[in-house]
Image (cartoon, helix red, strand yellow):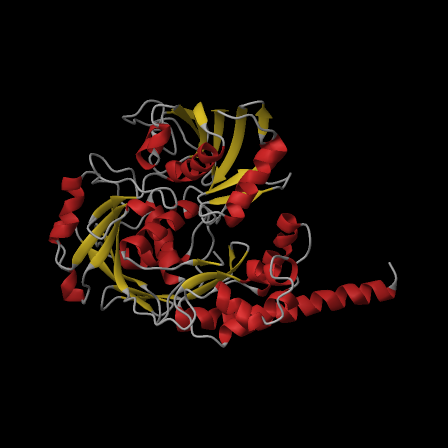
Length: 481
């Protein structure tokens, strides 16, 4: 390797770093001013590092076959910074690629191009009011929901975490709750600052004042005494799953709607965002966000059924152990779950295959399902063995799923990887409901086996956030369309 080559390599890297570092303040400013979230080919850049920005640009080559340089997307970001925008999710990677290499390659006026692509949000007045959010329960999902809400903290934030409700209240409880939010063995340290206000019984995180309320029943809380009104309550406990039980939240002063982070029973709508979220109406006061597995598999199944048709199949989930299992062998009311979770693979049932039909009725009665709990703390795998109505091959099927992940209305739900080396721990923190492992795809005529990864904690929490946003009647279009 000669000296000139080394200098060119170093110069290229330095250029990318400089562009990424220039981008970060604008990315933050666009969110704080307009609630506009910037991404590159679906990779969110809010609160990202310079290295994250560079990596997001490198990923474009895997999808398009050619590089997208930071100096090509930088003018897009500069132009956005001069505009007045309504809240949106704007993909500067797709805009830059289209402008330089795609359908707009002959376009010379960048500002006119952007105004045309973003016409639904350019020079539009933001009249969306912020909504109060309460987390009822502060376990695995509750704390991840808190992280997702706090990372968007700012004057223009539309979903404001105002309180968490837990049982107990023993000495030292507040500091322990804050410590669990601050440090996580799976998801790493909290990105920001957390302090405890013992006098006011609250947690302060990145400028958010979060009241900690102790209660044993949802209907005994008066949120209005804390200045909380018309709140959306996210019930993370799983204790109440029917309309009567969840309706207790609506008896509390200061609440308006409630969402359950588990499958709902009876006539409660089970929402998988991107699949049946159009069914959410302004009159809905109680909704369920279904289960993590249902959220992982239903978007993929919907996409496949609409393109190829599904006549039947079996879903096997290889699921990380959960807090419902025992650390060591002990009594458990369910079969096998009493055996030590960190030491055993445990066969158990899952209702996810049947639950798919609640969100996507076309597959009712067509799927069976089972589950194996395995000794990993997070990230699970769904194996979809399907019989399609049309024949296909591995290349065609993977290309369809890649395009679905990048350009379809399901782009927030389905991600796609072509890596030959990816393993479960690489998917911790994935914001998609599922990630299709294209290298593992098997196709034989009309019989297909797909391997679909999912972060059953964080990816699911992102789906819950999307449902909360819809319940709050907040519009955040994904652009370019």
